[in-house]
Length: 479
Image (cartoon, rainbow, N blue to C red; front, side, top):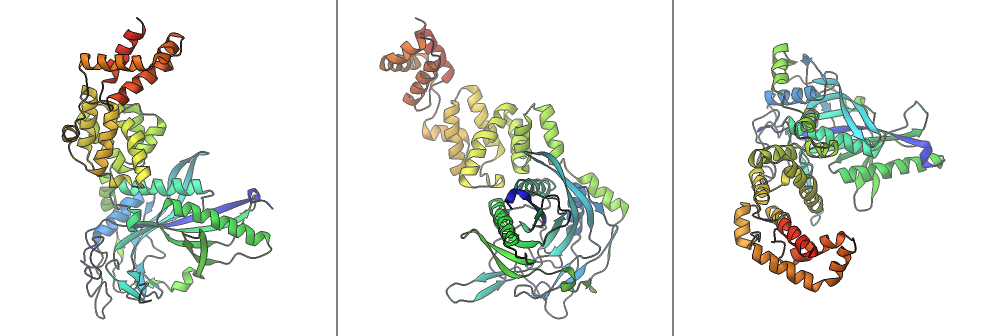
């Protein structure tokens, strides 16, 4: 039976590290990249006799995430112990939430090539992160770094509503965007602060029963997630078509070979032997507390997109791209305050900035320059100080060595040529060198003008004023 006769059923468990200054149950710092085991204390190292104390900011951030994803917020919640052994889990249990999560029954609307679709969110709960194993390939052993142990997480569990890799990517990007907007997580995938466990099963189209699912753990790149899902769907279909049975197991995705490998049997809730943590009191939230957090929520991506469509007359496609990232959206708004030219700022972000981010495999939050530098770049072009082609060079420079665009122009000698005599000389030189283009233009081939202007820009290394060039070429060609 061909693959087209099957459909995938997927659900995601997203872990987002919260942007609190301290850990969830102690006052240790959460700074990324610190020297190993320098951000630890007896509590997060699970020394005997130590007691956890819940960080209130963690609860606030989780409630914020719940409200932003249309969840119901529990007035009565608690922490539970999730029991399992792993070398970097100091207590041999993780403090998490089981039957009384902080947030439940939410949803996110996504947009794909097939239109809009609502993806259900089962729950959002708080928990602590484990440490990290650093594998030493030379000695053959592993070293444990507990800096990450106790870093606060929210786990966002979706309903099994996802059917394609396009939907999965759209859901993850929308969720990432929401968390960035409400500023509860920096969502830096390269640092592991936004990662997903992907549950995949397949079934024949029209079948209402779910197939056996497998889980791929801790994936932190959209490309890897997409590749892993495609491979796992094909693998499961092959197993079924060959008369086999898909095992419920936890898998590891290998980026190099492009294959999944079995790690262990997949656990069920009963395997973790959950019970309420006796060292922590219940979490009771008042209506006033929840209302205050709701009132503090910033403008969310969907609302900002709608405003851009109305206020700045952006296309739906452009508004989607810009509002998909809080960093891009903030850059857009603040640059407009400097230059008062929304159309130009939009064009720079949608075209050249997006292209460079893609080429350099950078996230928007890694853009090295500030909004005022982009705003000044637009002003310099609007004033005629530089041409748009020089503007592209300045943008490249801003990515490599961010500084005031005016300083870059002076250092590189990139000021636009707007002197009429100089430009006339260039025009005459190009026309003398291209008689065929003159003939083509007079024969009605308008593209010849564009070619001549391009040659003149090349001659002046992009410094000639393009409007003046166009005008002078037309004057000469009509003689």
